[in-house]
Amino acid sequence: SMAKSLEPIVISSLQITRSTNGMEAKNESGRSSDTMGTKHFVDYGVYVIKGSINPNFAEKTGFSAEDATVIKEALVSLFENDASSARPEGSMRVREVFWFTHSNKLGNVSSARVFDLLEFDKVKQDKDNYEDYGIHLNQEKLAEYEVKGLKVDILEGL
Image (tube, rainbow, N blue to C red; front, top):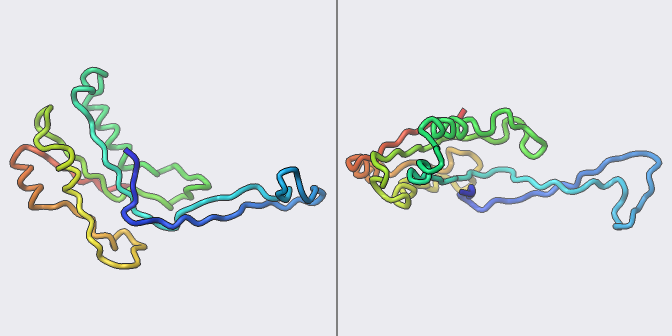
């Protein structure tokens, strides 16, 4: 699935240039020869991604429990050692992974109900810290689903 932000984000743009002596002032496009392009970035945002593993497709493709463990480990450490000009070191991180496991192939509750367990409360107006979002699981519904066999592991990101 694609990640979605909890709040509308603001995209800032920055023009990237270089300065070199002896270059012509304009080229065919009308841009100065020292203009390299534009870089877009988001100052702050909290994103949620939801996904699932279909056990029937997993059987057909040979996807195993060990493969699921590798995915879980990858999600927890997603942005480690992944620095770039678009994502400088330490600018992005995974905070929490909510990993749900059903006790049977059909599932104990629908994926839509599982996704609805994650709730977002408006704690502060400025929303420039993760703690400002009040992200949690609906414990009442979770207890009801756990009786039906649903299990949840909450993993902290690196």
